[in-house]
Length: 555
RNA sequence: UGGGAUGUCGCCAAGUGGUAAGGCAACGGGUUUUGAUCCCGUCAUUCGCAGGUUCGAUCCCUGCCAUCCCAGCCA
Figure (cartoon, rainbow, N blue to C red):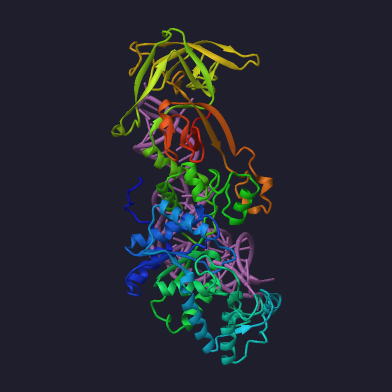
């Protein structure tokens, strides 16, 4: 799956729009952009947006710019620009040319502001933040004009220059567009274009003390870069009015092929949150070990958990693009990762809840070296060496004293079962400890069943996995579950009431000896258990469970 | 009577005046030294509701209903 391009392209409203624009000749190429604010780590929701922006551009032989929307130095940090670049590359996308920054257009933005002022379309307003709010009116009542709204053009030119020169203190005044204080779109009631911030910016240092607002900077950045289709999420639908207004009122950008904004619905995934604030809370309160905790829906968390870039791209395609508010079933994500991993993950055996099994008719001291396929459906992946001897470990879950019904396929007393890649065995008796827990299982094996079925025609239905005790290596298994109990944690202001106390279970068991060579983030399929990858932040052999195998076994 | 959006199978999601794609999940059956994979099959007389236009509507019109977004000098 990893590198195959689907023959059938998905159809969605964005592609329909692009097709229309290409057919009409409005645009001859497709240019998109992914515009993260460097104030946090990327998560699965961003991944969807990345796939849409980069993926769509690529499919149309266009390109996508990576543009950091860094207009608020108070909240942003270089740390995030680095992690964001890393995550996008890891997902398998390349941006066009150099990384772009809104901040590198600050000079152009400033000139645009001057143009607006000179056209009488912007003014410096001295209302306080509180007064501005009062003047704005409410959803049902119109606002009222600022006292500064009709001050002269030249006066405003001087004032704006003073703002830039640092002659006003933070909050003393702002530059506002002169649009319509009675507009039904709140964002059109003379929106703020520039505010004063005496902050050092990670790209422009102390060059500026005035910073543009998102609504002002975004459309201009798009226009400067020649973006054709500016794709964002639904909550910006109202903002489209200011986006269009600005581009229509600036001489340089009022062109028929100017950018247009289209909004799609953001990703909501069951049992997870994509709220940066809530994610940060989980980290700060130590409910998780960090931003890359394998339970986190961050790109770095998914990566550490064993998700592959291909699986995330596939997931993005499976959920599609629309304008409907939705809550996506986790099984769609799990389906994507299982499909990818099933195709590429080397097979291995590991015992997570070990219990000793002794083969009484197998010679003591004998150790056999056996071959096992690395991938049963892909011989090209070769074979691996596994060991077999008198004492093995099997999983507690694979043994009961008496089988509950005739569909039961695991080990029970007097029942035969195949040891995966090895012999058929039959359990004879077992020992328990003081608490009555099964401690050791004794069995006999049929020496004539290696690589073949019993010659007398006996049918052995069940297959269980094992690992030879002297060669096995100890391993820690981290079994993850959803972080929240409620499928829609967005409903909760306080997430603590819906936190899943069992989102991490640690088990100590054994793995095949060759697992000692496992590289971090390399995913294996432990047969009958699921997919696991070696943890990238731990010293010993720590295996993170990516996802289990599909389990259709119902009693 | 603020405005902007959205409502198609349990979850995503195409379609659009000609009689409902696909994926996930689920459920049957087959293959199988992973209860996995793979294969085959089943799964919306119906498109939020109610009217209307039409030979014919999920698609057009009208009216309802439900949900989401907007009153940062955040993005």
